[in-house]
Image 1 (tube, one colour):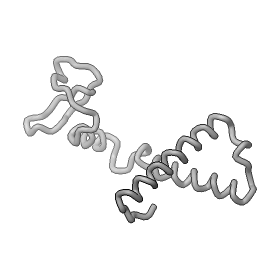
Image 2 (cartoon, helix red, strand yellow; image 1 turned 180 degrees about the vertical axis):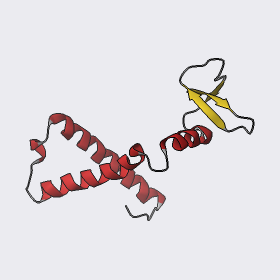
Image 3 (cartoon, helix red, strand yellow; image 1 turned 45 degrees about the horizontal axis):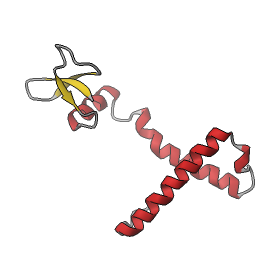
Image 4 (spheres, helix red, strand yellow; image 1 turned 120 degrees about the vertical axis):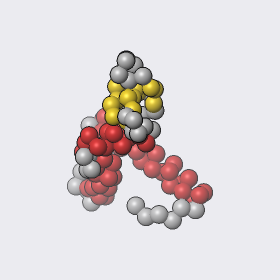
Length: 107
């Protein structure tokens, strides 16, 4: 949770990790007001916002390099192998859930 200060119109004008006199109201970090405040600070295109699509590109690139025998999965550091396996498992689970829901979105 975070603590916020709101302006006269109810908009978040300040955010803190700790409660104090200036930040009396508790809010969820995913609250739209908090997110709007953070986006305004960071600008429209944040580095963190571009990370998720780039991660997908890197995963696909690694898979392509393995498929073309340019690298072997075991050539990667153990930590990288674990992270890739965890992501593959999550993607497989997500795909099976999409089949159940009938989602027809393309990646």
